[in-house]
Image 1 (spheres, one colour):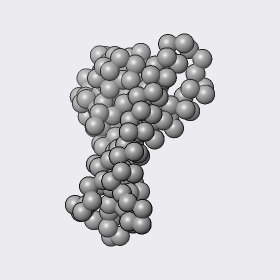
Image 2 (cartoon, helix red, strand yellow; image 1 turned 90 degrees about the vertical axis):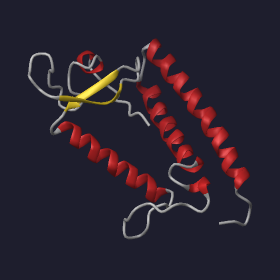
Image 3 (cartoon, helix red, strand yellow; image 1 turned 60 degrees about the vertical axis):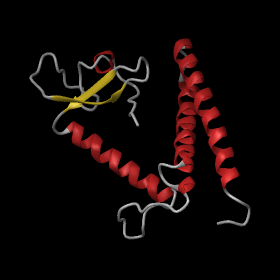
Image 4 (cartoon, one colour; image 1 turned 135 degrees about the horizontal axis):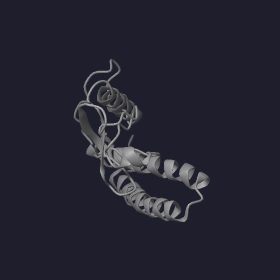
Length: 151
């Protein structure tokens, strides 16, 4: 799953500056690595190879661990995720995807409440429509695959 970086300045969105520390890749000899995309135009964005990319990787690992524990896919000792008997509730299953869609909708709500630029509003509304439709379909699928009394 591709990671999106929000609130980028023009240089960061164009891939000419680090998305974490804003280091200028054109004027400084800094090694960079691709870390995600700009939501505005889907262009690739970059971070300094050391230490910024490591910070992003650590944050991604922490978020993945939180998501696993939120859906109960991680054991109490914090070990590896075991295979789910019922694939619906796995982190990568329909329930995990539903949670990601709901998180995107909550973020879009916060951004819609603060934005006044028409093009940004249109983008956020299209993002909201896409994730709302997917959340509805996934919620119906999870409901269909679970029976009342299971649990």
